[in-house]
Amino acid sequence: MRWTRAAGRGLLALAVVLTGYVASGAHAGEGPGGGRGPLTLATGGDLTGYLGSVLDGWNRAHPDERITLVELPDSSDETYAQMQTDLRSGDRSRFDILNIDVNWTSQFAAAGWIRPLPRESFPLDTFLPPVVDTATYDGRLYAVPYVTNAGLLLYRADILEREGLAPPRTWAELESYAESVAPKYGLDGYAGQFLPYEGLTVNAAEAVYSAGGTILGDEGERVTVNSEAAREGIGFLVRGLGEGWIPQEALAWKEEESKQAFQNGELLFLRNWPYAYVGAAEPGSPVAGKIGAVPLPGPDGPGTSVLGGSNLAVSSYARHPETAARLIAYLTGESVQRQVLTRGALPPVRADLYEDPELIRAFPYLPTLRESVLSAAPRPKSPRYDQVSLVVQAVVRDALTGRQTPAAAVRRLASELAAVSSR
Image 1 (spheres, one colour):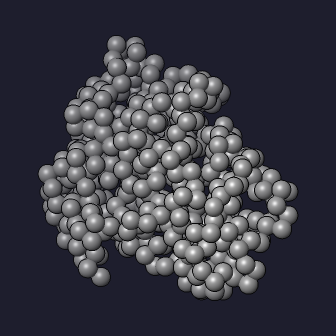
Image 2 (image 1 turned 120 degrees about the vertical axis):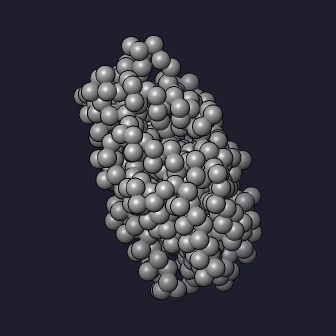
């Protein structure tokens, strides 16, 4: 979950039918204060103060339903750990509403920490369709999408134009340009995020998905990674490091380090989230006015990104679930969602904003991002997602550093993921 700058004030006609919501909750008896009243909203570090201003607007309009913002650490792993610890405390939980990374939904739902929500209470039909899938588990809605994200291929448009080349659509084109064009300009060819953390899971999953493969099926009950597609996807990354068109330094990069390398004019191509495009395009950036963005390439054409972003969930122990649902409706309304983009350069979940001419002028990558989100896929769904991700990171890291061949790594992935699924 990446917080940079995002949504501001918002208006919403809060005529939401919530009777079904109260009945559907894991604890339908509610807290001592009934359906409406003050709540806390827990989120990863609000780096720019945008969420505070959003909630100030809500609190002025709803003085009896005030929302207190609880900021957890900037680190996704630390936020996850603190949320888990709090939710395990049951009725003593301090958190009512949770702003959770999209890949936590399945695990929190399976553990019984968040309550199912009635689809009819939220404007899901106004969202980009794939984002809704990140908020479901076992066929039920357990959260409401708030911010989405998809990986893009950023590139030096000035250099490709000078060479008379279109942006790469396939892995073969990407490799060719990274090997032959980048060195002419003193650049490295391509990078992603290859330090062993959640970003490596994302990069590996995108490579496997782009080749037509999958990692898990049936909500984590079935392991599907042992395939030619997975070997091809992992092999693409291994080949890049072995042949040198992915620099060895990228093995230590997360989002910010790779963004900075591209922004400093050190890379021809970069896989990253849209926020990296925004930073590189800002006045004063060495590559401002020289960059472009296209969907991630795959073996035979555009590939598949992993969906990022965050979802809003209601704790099973929330004191006032009706207020929680009303706040979520407010945060996903059109006005707040517009501010998510215009103030924060974070991708909103509402589909109509991606076709707004004024927004496209301000954010030229929006059509590409829409295309990428519509063809994106969630990370492997599993009630043990944290363990799944750790396995992927460890095994793929060994492949990237030459300790295992792609074929051996895929076999090991299948074995270790099967062990996780059987626990």
